[in-house]
Image (cartoon, rainbow, N blue to C red; front, side):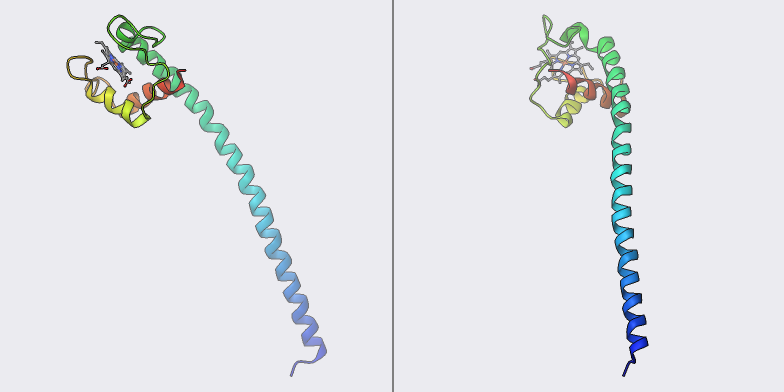
Length: 124
Ligand code: HEC
């Protein structure tokens, strides 16, 4: 059987490893939370740039129909308060609408369309 010294050593080792684990998990959690916050800050300025670029593309290609502020023109509806999803906006921009709106698939690549959609999503 174990003698007293062995039992005490084992107990000490056990407590020590629990401490190490606790520090690792709690410390790790704080680290990830902190990092997560940093990671979230970054895309917000990136998405601002995306929206700004999208707006300038919109002014070049869409505003003569949909209005400078996307609030509707003579021939095209307002794009404010759009009820459709981003994926649906992407489809409309890429495919156009027969007899109503031209397709922009040749003019704009996926990244450009993404910028325009980012802009449309900010409209209220
Ligand atoms: C030639 C004029 C014209 C141009 C240029 C044009 N559109 Fe349109 N767009 C229309 C018309 C007209 C409709 C409505 C068609 C319908 O409802 O049948 C429409 C519909 C849409 C819709 C769907 C709205 C809804 O409520 O479902 C979106 C989104 C849209 N346009 C975005 C754009 C974007 C972004 C651009 C520029 C890349 C653009 N349009 C350029 C004429 C145009």
